[in-house]
Image 1 (cartoon, rainbow, N blue to C red):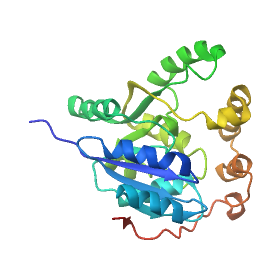
Image 2 (cartoon, one colour; image 1 turned 90 degrees about the horizontal axis):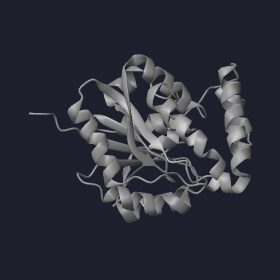
Image 3 (spheres, rainbow, N blue to C red; image 1 turned 120 degrees about the vertical axis):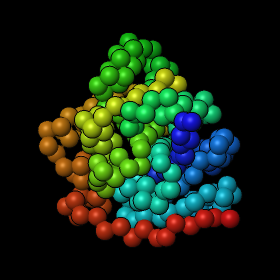
Length: 253
């Protein structure tokens, strides 16, 4: 009889007030119900706490803000054998969920993966890029955070997790995951909010992202890149040293 896998969904939140409630509502309607943990580093934690209370979701506060640190702390509190790292502004349906569980049930060699990203509607000029991105991602490409990366919990900790990195945590982890074993990119496309593209323009945003990745590949510290990306010195000023002031996991009821 095939093993029935359980799933913990970890959501790193940083001022995602606009999207969090609707995302938690969608995730709370999944069947079988996954464990859901919001790992929060928002300026107003009280707002996030109220949202989680409305949906009876587990909540973890992490300071200072660091996406990698938030993901790592959430994973430490998770209890399921599959970890899914999901952004608050990204959709996730029952179809995505069923595809995830089925992939592990039908192939015991899979250690992790992600979903294809829906980028077709960003701009007509990127339709060709969308086709290339699909082929690249399916076989050798980086698995980015907004593709809802998933991994067996045991493998996650064996690989050292996201190493608390404030930026490029997904690029770093993706490389480790692909080197370790069988990674599956699932066909149901996943769509994220276009807020950053709308604010800065599609082309400019993509060029910025590409430039940051190039700098990272050239050896620039993720902490310095985080300063450039977020426009503050909170990450880089510690020279890569994070002291987490995370509180105990709260079950908001």
